[in-house]
Image 1 (cartoon, rainbow, N blue to C red):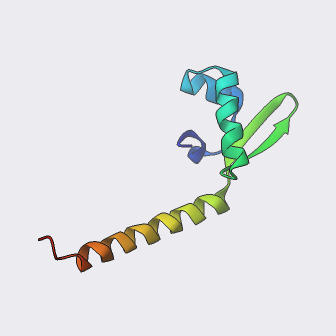
Image 2 (cartoon, rainbow, N blue to C red):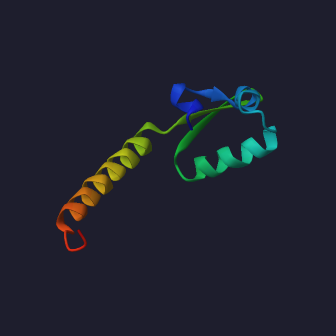
Length: 81
């Protein structure tokens, strides 16, 4: 995901960057695509992946709301101090 935050990447390039096999990487990329986190496009025999910006934004908003909720809970929980 970190590599894809830099922009769209071809599976062949990601394989070299991450020092893994194409089959292993493709398995994980497919799982992320099925979860909606990634989008793909085909160009000839190559597949290019990119982050799904809408989903990433939703995840960031969700995590921010969890952080805010956690801070409120810590402030409200003074019984154990």
